[in-house]
View 1 (cartoon, rainbow, N blue to C red):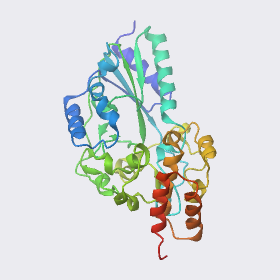
View 2 (cartoon, one colour; view 1 turned 120 degrees about the vertical axis):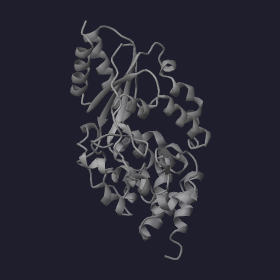
View 3 (cartoon, rainbow, N blue to C red; view 1 turned 180 degrees about the horizontal axis):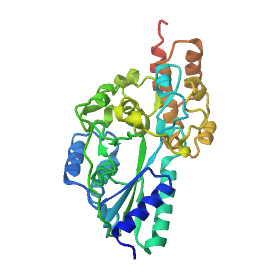
Amino acid sequence: MPNQLERRKQIEQIAADLGFSGVRIGPASVPEAARTAFNDWLAQGCHGTMGYMARHADLRHDPDKLFPGALSIISVRLPYWPAKASDAHAQLANPDAAYVSRYALGRDYHKVIRNRLQKLADTLSTQFGEFNYRAFTDSAPVMEVALASQAGLGWKGKHTLSLDRTGSWYFLGELICDLPLTPDQPIESHCGDCTRCMDACPTGAITKAYKVDARRCISYLTIEHKGEIPEEFRKAIGNRIYGCDDCQLVCPWNRFTSEGDAEFDPRHKLDSATLLELYAWDENEFLNKMAGSAIRRIGFEQWQRNISIALGNATPSDAVINALRHKKTHSSALVKTHIEWALLQFAGS
């Protein structure tokens, strides 16, 4: 039976072989400060229409309720920065281009990380003997950033994302297990007095350091929110049709990021597509091209809703107006509402 130091070295090596850029170990508990902050966030309604956040709050507070008998949590990160993608700033600056959050340009991270966590667990079982575990990656009531911070995998940035000296362009994953492992210590935050992420948010969703009001967040509005997007945010959404990266794009630590895993390289030219190109897709084309992508889960209706708003912020042209009018005749009531708003932006042009 390997000792604690040997176990640790084996875990690090296996994780590195699987492409994880970092691995740390923490206790099977959530810090009290994180639980309190989450409860306050819920009480203020900052979760918007994400009712599941409140329904499963007790599970988020206590990993033992998700996995009885948990002793340790192995936290890992997988980098996704798509170095081969078209320049993010240039795509955002072009009102006729479609901006898709960098994490969603390639394959669905849920599947990629879950598969690798399974391989990690299988290999550890071979080397340490059978043990019990559950694997998670943004797929269950787990306070991932709090657990990663507690284990020293990074610190919680003012934008609420996990961050370290190599930036924030990475996904998190966890193995909650009954292995008795020596926990790592948290690392010091290095955000200092920087507020670039807060200042850059197009809708003012980072209402104060370490707090994001989802109801104002473009990522929430374009992905999690299923209904009509409030008019007050439509101009600020600009050409962002799936998610938003503004708070990460301005973070000084992201100057030191490394190239992400090849699984997250752009597919179907999502890094450089125009709004009209993507708006021309019918539902079958959307479903086929987005197979294996995190984008597919929002569905075709939300996809059209989001692009309709972005076209309302595009350069006025006959092509844009005609595309909106044509789509309106075949769209749901939800999409039509946003098309009508978009067409109003061109009144008098």
